[in-house]
Image (cartoon, rainbow, N blue to C red; front, top):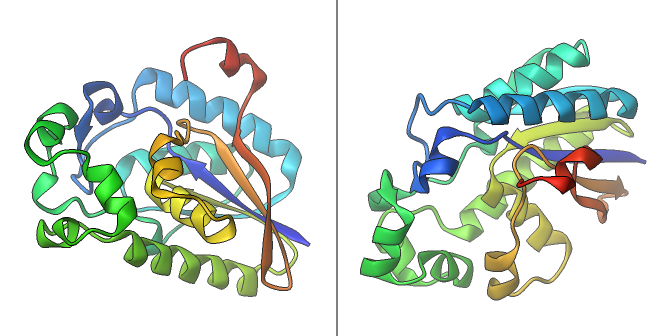
Length: 207
C-alpha cells in the first residue's frame, strides 16, 4: 500500500496580493513560502519518497525543487498538475471578481455554466486530469510514496473524488500553503490519511 501525497506550493506573491493569477508565469514564492517549503521538505525526509511530480508553474516547481533537494530526487514536470485556467478572470483581484460576478468559486464547484462561459476550466475537467496523473503514478510507482506538487483546486478535486463534499464544503475548505494532503491507495481505492499536514510549529502562526 502506497501513498499519493499532494503538496500545495508554498506561499507565493499572488497569495498575499489576493489576485487570481491562474497560469500567469513568473509569480515567485515569498520568503515565507520558501521557508514553508523547507520545513515540508524536512518533514518528507521521514516518509521514504520515491518520486516527485510537479505542476510547471513557477511557484509549484520551486517548491518541488526544494523538496527534491532534501530527498535526493529529481522533479518530474507534468501539465496535469497545473493551476486552474482562470480564463477572463486571470489577473483580477478577488474582491473585484466577487463584486462583478458574485461568488465565482461556489459557481465553479457547482458546475454553473457561467464559469465555462468566462473561459474558466470546469471542476469536472480538473478532476479528470488529476485522476489521470494519480492513475499514472500508481501504475508507475506501485506501493510507493509519491509527491505531487500542485495548487489548491487540483487538491480539492482529489478530495472531492474520495469523499462526498458539497460545493459549500469545498469553498470553505482551505488547503494551507506547503501542506501535505495524503491519500493511501489499495487496489485503486483511496482513503485519506491527512489533510493540511505540516510542521507542528506552523500551527502557532498564520498559515
